[in-house]
Amino acid sequence: MLIFGVVLSGTYDMFSWPYQEWTRTSSEFMWQLAITGPIAAAAATYYAGRLTPPSRIFAQRSSARPVSAILNRHLCLLLSSHLIGYVLAFVPLLVLTAGKAQHGGPDILVILTGLVGLATATVLGYLTGIWSRTAVMSSLSFVLLLGVTVIGTTGMSALSPVPTHVLTLGEQASRPLLIYRLIFLAIVSLAAAQISLALLRSTSRKPPLAALVAVPMVMLFALGPSLRQPTVSVYRADAPRACTAKAGVEYCVHEGHRRQLVAFVTGGSEVVAAYGFAPERARRIYDRALLGTAAPNELVIWPSLSPANRVEGAVASEVAHSLAGTDACIKRYGFRFPPDIANFNAYFFNWLRGAGTAPLHSDYNPFKDVPLAAVQRWIETHDRQVETCTVDLNTLPT
Image (cartoon, rainbow, N blue to C red; front, side):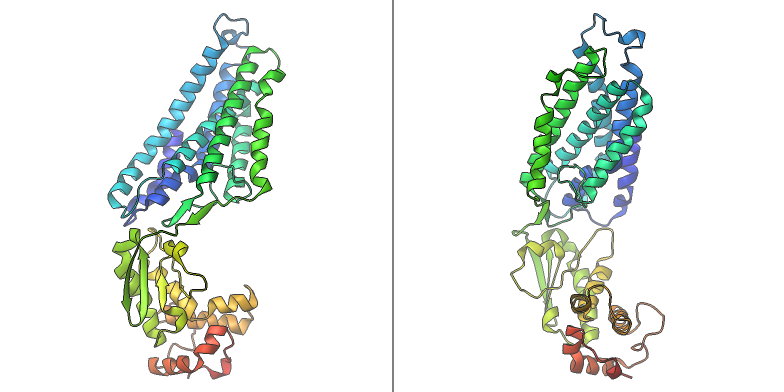
């Protein structure tokens, strides 16, 4: 029930989104392991720590009951309860995505990785409980598995079932890495189950050497990604698109965002209209989901669309940043702009983001009370300086 509640609460905000993406929904099966994995491990440790110590009268090593039957029963109970709760919590989101997604379908390998990752966490937790012979170690299982998920989200390990980020439309998890990770998780699970079986048969906490035969294989697989950093995800080069043009600017979105094309154009065209004309760097405004289709050295503005954000706002902000010269300033100064350059960039961005009529923020802005025509004349004269982040602040329009 706890796993069910955690997943349901973790995906609840997605229910109110105006549209869904199969890529993102599939990725949630891995992302939600960040908390549910440690919970599953802790629960399994508690269960094993309570039911398997040889001090329990019903868990004597001399019992006539086959030890393998005990292991099978325990793991079947734990795995079925954890996996069923996990899957049931995703049912509402899957149904919603099936109705609201505009392109594609579920990514079976990504979903399977999430389920196998949860199973692996459960078996490792069970092993910890058998080895420690106490339910108190459930807290240690939680902390250790939480550390594994943190390693995964920071990109330090490509083998963690928790990804570095939630995949979005246009992205695809690396197929070779997914298969490699699934094999690795399966080997870890089998090795943990084998050691658990040996410990159930033993009166000592030290498993026989024969039970550790799979450990070298686990270590070998774990070393693989460290020899060569694998690609975690890529943008698809064959992503389908829907395009239109307005005022000399081409607007394209991924087919999965086709219904958002009108809002996409609205957000970008308002900023371009405030600028007065479309410079070369703003004549192609493409959905970031199409990043894999870009030609080398092609000048494109790449707004990132998310079901959680307003399309118009996301596009307007990205276009305003580009036209205000933010990217050029970052290339020139890094992220430590000189104060006067930082102020100009913020003022100009806010003015553009407000479509040239009302700056995004009501604080002081030198462009605020200047007529639109005067600002646009200044832009036309100083566009090259804006593009290269070399604006002379003494020339601002008044």
